[in-house]
Amino acid sequence: MSTENMHETETHDESRQGEALILDIPMINPVKKLYVESYGCAMNFSDSEVVASIMSKEGYATTRDIEEADVILINTCSIRDNAEQRVRNRLTDFKKKKRENPELVVGILGCMAERLKKNLLEEEKLVDLVAGPDSYRSLPSMIEEVGTGQKAVNVLLSRDETYADISPVRLDKGGVSAFVSITRGCDNMCSFCVVPFTRGRERSRDPQTIVKECQEIFDKGYREVTLLGQNVDSYRWNMSSKGEIKDPSRETMNFAQLMESVAQIDPKLRIRFSTSHPKDMTDEFLEVMAKYDNICKYIHLPVQSGSTSMLEKMNRGYTREWYLERIEAIRNIVKEVSISTDIIAGFCGETEEQHQDTLSLMEAVKYDFAYMYEYSERPKTLAERKYEDDIPKEVKNRRLTEIIDLQREHGLLANQRQIGQVQEILVEGNSKRSDTELAGRNTFNTKVVFPKMPEIKPGDYVMVKIVNCTSATLFGEIVQI
Ligand code: SAH
Ligand code: SF4
Ligand code: F3S
Image 1: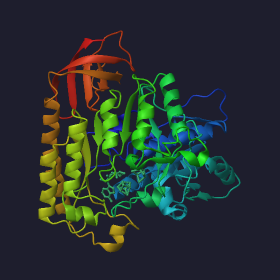
Image 2 (image 1 turned 90 degrees about the vertical axis):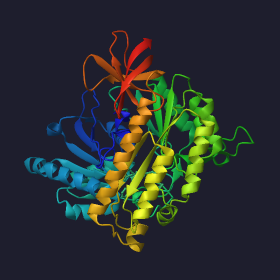
Image 3 (image 1 turned 135 degrees about the vertical axis):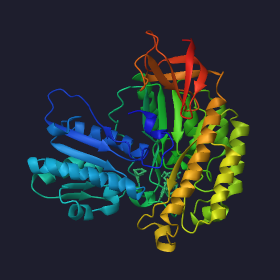
Image 4 (image 1 turned 180 degrees about the horizontal axis):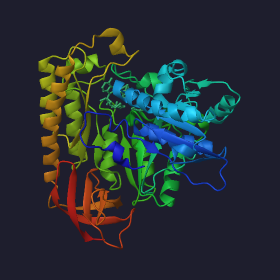
């Protein structure tokens, strides 16, 4: 798995929330074969690695060849209607396989499983198993239950499950970059968002297990970790609750302190994180970011809208002014840093003027990158219960196009500004375009492509001079290995 799905080109569709990942873990004398496909955010991809780990202990080896699978698991996303539609289309492909092989077990995991619960068994007749995000430890027994001819459903959400003790099976073939979950769930209740319903209450993971996992990843040769949470800034661990308190002045560990511990593992381990929340991002954290060269100078800070009244309706917990002040703080404290965002076009009741506020905020910030979406009403959310999804499809679409066009200009400007700079690039592998080029990322998370040299391999750091760009990619020449 690459971090590609975290940093796609601008898009209308689900390319970030819907990249499929096919797991492939070799095993000696495997008993049974498991095929897993993942959709959605990085959290889901990371969960699939936990699932692979749980299943490998039961003797399951993963396969890329669906034809030889004994068990098919599909890890799903509910964030927008089209994310669910993609999964439904994929399920109809599996129907054929099930007809050919009635022994085959088909299971749905993740957010759609949690949202639709046992209804999925009725809606999608072929499904044998429905497992929500906090139930993966019970997958082996659920599969056993299916073996006795029953359907298995576990959609219990937990207040404390973090899978902290499970060492995920790394599925990234490149072996350079890995995801590490630090929190699960979300307590924010943004009115448009289904995540609090599919992922449950927010909980933080024991920092010792996080640091240990990052150290192990580094020891295995990885050179980048991305710490994951729906709102990483609200990470908080009570040190005294487990008798772990070493420094009496430090009763709790917050995100800034956690970042510092991870950054100290090794200067050659790059640290990324996603997602930051404008209402919770502190100066203390920004100071830690500025202090450590190996904390990448890239912040994803979703704004959703540039209008204070819309933000209030979205229940985001900040105003336009607050957001702009946070941007100023980032640029004052961290200085050279790239910033990306998420924007929703056409939320309930959005006026033309409020849409213009979003465009003017974009002008004020000049994002390096953005993920941009049309509002999609989600069942059970506050917005669905309280507000009418009243912006016509064509208007949503036109507003989104205006947002995307403006972002394209800003993205190009951001890349052009880097021409002439000499940057440290972490090499990820061959460039997709050609066999004679390598690709990696700079600290700002921009993809950089440069000519191959035989002595350079994935995981190496090289100094590259940027000579050219498009709105999505920088092109350079190696100046020093
Ligand atoms: N926890 C992250 C975002 C998780 S979802 C945060 O708070 O920023 C990723 C993005 O999907 C959101 O930032 C939002 O822009 C978008 N999104 C969420 N619900 C949506 C909906 N109902 N319609 C359209 N876009 C949505
Ligand atoms: Fe959804 Fe808001 Fe939580 Fe992000 S912070 S996951 S948008 S509820
Ligand atoms: Fe989708 Fe669930 Fe992630 S809804 S975006 S897979 S938390």
